[in-house]
Length: 435
Image: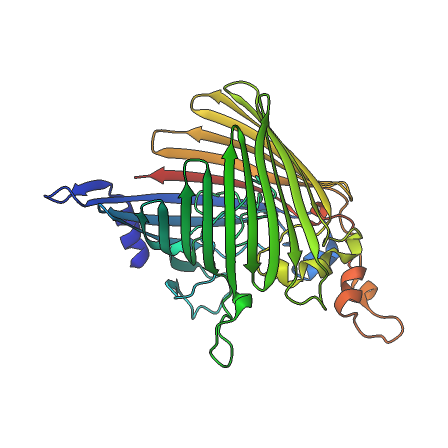
């Protein structure tokens, strides 16, 4: 019932003014359908243990979003509620649709349908209030309280400074970054300097047994940015889930080429478990013509691993499980090209590569504007690189004890030879309608 109501209300688009002209209300919405196909490679071990499906599989997703905004002379209110239904998961995939993405909630404003379904193949239904905030201005101060998206830094595909709730390039639909419960304040000094204060909730396990607030469940950040000429320079001081983070960001131009760089230095919350680490990206963007755009980036992280036998163990780390990181190696490069074939058709191609093990993801795409309110998006992720070794179950048994291998010994024996070669390939088709 809630999904049907959201879809019906999402079809409305209106602007209503109060008689005194002081209040403006807007109601909009969008509806998206997504089809994802996954094509596994031939590997007996991974298919037998369920890591990969044995045959090509497909998944369908329907997503509706109702958007309501209310503006007065002094305040702005924003509410988004998204409802997503999908078939059972297709298993491990190189990409995510970006629809129905969840985030930690200080106040649970989500719901799930069919929670008593016993079959793994059952349809999934969920809803989430993804935006719910009020904002206003006090002279040179702009403040926002409530659920909102937060983005830091200038990185495009690699985002070492975007630590609160990052998006990754393998997420296909990045139109709506999941909102987090936060309080933000932006203080402007003239037209060239801005200072931002951010407090955000980032961990579902925020309350301890003594009901005290814990710093490792929150993100606190001070971000200052200054613009001089064609250059933007920013500094980040943060406490992210207990980690202490220092960051620098720069955006500038060299002739017609835009250049950006982000770098962060992190002191982990538990120095006995992790060493301090650095993450950094340098990138360029060149608009060759009005229709042709090139971008490229190089990224490095010192906490990655270089031996493919350590990849699975790295993936099981806390930072990966909570969505803070997605790359397990050390050094990466990316390149992309976007070309407007006609005013209604735009094509693109991207390549993301692990420069140490020579594996990559190739992502072609095509965006067709069917009308002013309807878009058709097609694309995929093609995994390139050495596939895992063909193994048998006996290869995962400790010959000295006769028992199955456990932990890191098991992960090392899985025969992973490259990062992106471990992924299956996939294709997607998305239809988006706006009202």
